[in-house]
Image (cartoon, rainbow, N blue to C red; front, side, top):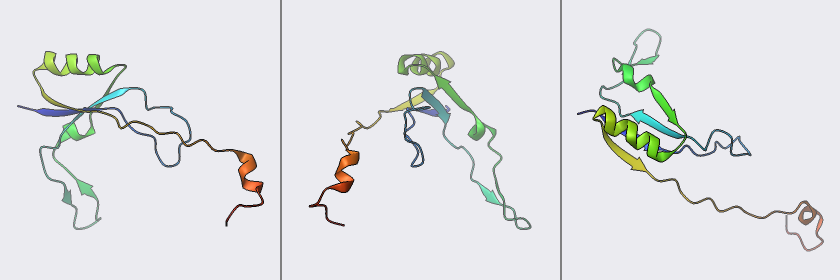
Amino acid sequence: MTKVRIYQPSRTAMQQGNAGTRDWIVEYEPSARRTRDPLMGWTSSADTRAQLCLRFPSREDAVAYAERKGLAYEVIEPQARRPRIKSYADNFRFDRVN
């Protein structure tokens, strides 16, 4: 039975907003090892499902897809985001330690 992971992607380090983090992703787990080409050094795999990444607007839609296709799935819940409140004026405080 094929196994999939259902998760909500996190922000990248270079990203400031929440764009691309609202959808839920269904991703197949790798079924074959990656191999290294001896001549060029590129990595490759015989597993074509590794390239497949399905996006769904909600968690329920992603789970319904996995159940409809008969896939074993694992739901990875997103971590809670803790925003840090910052003020631009704090950069110019007199008691600021460098």
